[in-house]
Image (cartoon, rainbow, N blue to C red; front, side, top):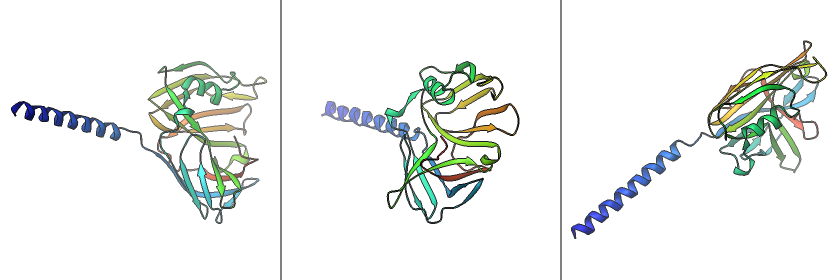
Length: 228
């Protein structure tokens, strides 16, 4: 009897340890990204107005779901689909420097890191019409293009690179970058300044929680004219 009692004690202890480890694991999971706010219709020449009658659903290319009710959007995304992750090196060279002329001396602090990325939300109205929602600067039509994108990293990683002159000599210049991505969701700010010559392009991490920041709006673009 004593042997059986000791065996049950051992089994209970193993079960408790497993439960504790499972609880700790779930507690350490990354927090979901929640995006919300009033959607504005883009009509050109820097003019936007509230989409008070817009109703439908929202998705992204990497996961998540949301709704739009009378122009008010709410979208939540947790960990992206496993199939959409790519190496941080591939992400940099296909998304941030596709032509291979914008940066040099690119250094990744961690090898083997994986990331997923999206810049717009794909919408569908109740009648089946498609639309695209993006986070952009309010002065984008005045010579300063600003947009926001979202990057999920599977671990902390820093990307540094020296900016250099873009195509055709000094038409576009890329500033040095130091992107400190934390595990989970990171919000990137992309900016091109057309006010001065040469045009200056910058990229920086401006948020890690997705909450609104000054100077940006949620804009509804017709699917054929969305800024990519």
